[in-house]
Image (cartoon, rainbow, N blue to C red; front, side, top):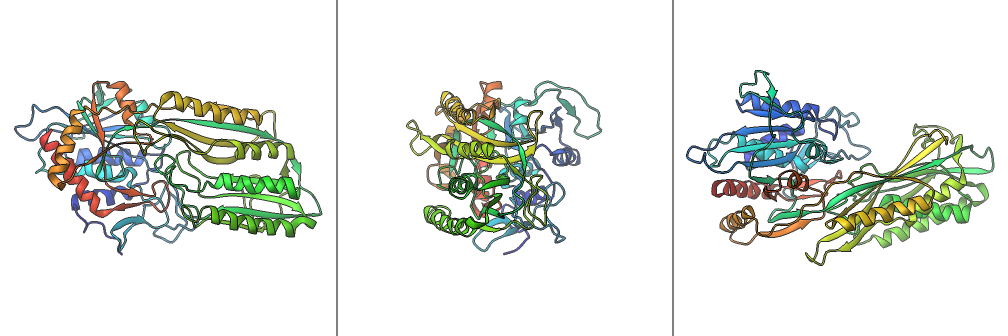
Length: 526
């Protein structure tokens, strides 16, 4: 394996991707990648537009003789999911920081590109790279192009929601002279390059909504004597995309931890001092931990229970998530209520009534696939993800608060609302305050799409086999674009990416070239 991507084919795409990996771009903190894109346009003499939220459009004129063809929008998002292993390091050997450090990609012997200990950012960096390479390609044949780069797709589709508000126009020379502009994009066709399965073209996606539950609790002095403190931790899970991977039977660390805590409460007089699980609303949680206290005369039995419970969980997930680990260790150097490291047992615990409400809700709330589609066999229709459990400062009426974040998806709008209400009802019955996000719409398939027909013909011509036409159980920005531009014809395509939203994210090298050739052929013949 090696670290040099520039030797891969197509070279122009991989060079752009490698350059993108050097620019930090966490969701909601995309200022550097946005500035980098503007610099790219200025450097290469391309006209660009930038709106108030940070979306960027870079324009390229049509190839000579193709000026009268409809404008095509090539769309990607600039942010990436920032997940890392606890021991991930930067190039200097220091703990990795997504806001400061470059991703460290490498080529595997099996023909994939991965990153050292972190998400790779191929979602959606490889799509960005293809669009940028096309903007520089003097030999590609195409009509007018608009390369649209949106911000904050992963945590709220903010760029797509607010596209074009307060737009400004930058000159091709990059002189900095800006003026008020009209619509950010004008294209009739849109090709979203944010899909993750080469050989498949997507014409529909799920809509989504987040449901948050706020559990107030009271702090109490930890038992001064007669108790043993432990940290119980769930780790080693695959995690992954909460839409695309939700049907793969992977373990949910928050649910697994809740199961252990429930038995601890019922059988061992457990007291909870701290809890933390998962990170991102759109990632299946891989890790969760809790600091607990149990009476000393029950400590040995509790340890035996955890050992047996770990065996049970491994057996349950033997064929879908075999790396799961449930471990117990003394609480020295574990986390206290503030989340800071401590060399002694926590001074406070959470009142038992609040813990029972929380754990009961984590056990009872819906999680995973809720319904499969009858309209498109094999497609998940509706799902929900128990994404994260986080402690936060107290409210005006309580000394502490625990925030549980869940996300619901469905290709049926009414089903999306129904499952969100069901999730919220469980939390409300447990005494939590519940909030639902504004959500985002799905993208209804259009089997009669002209762009789809062109894509099908292009794929069969290039690879002598039909492309698969699918919908995806994940959120794409296409649904929002369709709301604003109802006449727009769109598809989504891209190379094969696996284990997205996890540090095991990888992209299959051979599929990048196939996706690149398909894109060139679509633009040549559309």
